[in-house]
Image (tube, rainbow, N blue to C red):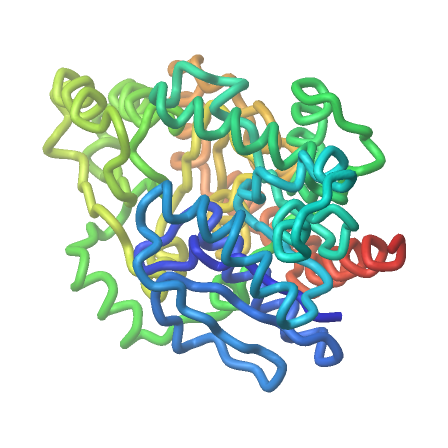
Length: 396
């Protein structure tokens, strides 16, 4: 197979779908040396190399119009020239024009135009729709972000020969929101990198602790500061902890500032616990395993997740987890963590208190989390993804 992989989200400071895209292509290259991969990037990525990988920089495509032009015109021409069998879009986006292919198939158009409309299905399209958060929880997205997700997820559902999503929760949402055959949707759960499963050297721990001025003991949250992540709710739950625990365990919040971050920070300031909170901002990928492993407790009261990477990474690091009983999070955490209503701040606080005050409880959840994390591995994810590609190609 000759596979084109859309890597435009693989950029410095990536999160969410960017991390998924990079891990997906890396794991595919690890298991598949028979196919030829063409990875399209908007900036160099030196740490991705393989004998069967060709990287192509599409410089300057930082505007919406230019991206749509590449998807709908330039890529189909490239695909025709290089005999591409399949295009994989790991971040919702597929070209718009192929949805009109049946209509244009009957018209006397030049061959180059018929490629653009994919009239003969010469290119197979597979797309990942990790979640539909902007539709399920529109209050947590800006109007522009809601429109973007609705337009692109809807188009992808129509154009794609197969859809990949990352949890049964997301699959249910996609089936409910779009007229798509459930058999067309394949669930390929994500996994956790080996870096979260290893012991860290004292020098590495010291380096990360010094770099971020970490307190001796802390409760950790990792995620973008935006409404869906419920960071203000977490701070409220923390403010309800007994004062002795607040003095002993600081609240460390790691993540970039997203939309509505100023309002969220203003809400947190009103709680008068700023002296107990450490805001780290964006954390380098190489530092995150130590940051997690050094935490005493990981709390993630998100309102909705397509999968829920941070709790899985925390479990793999041996850290007790408190998270939400919403969306995909129960699929990831199982009985290895504490799951609560994300709006029940008193319950969140009580569970935090229970774990922090009882070493046996903390140790039990740490053990359970380590065992649960073993159920997820990138090899299985890659094999499931590759099987989808093969089945789509076989239907030609």
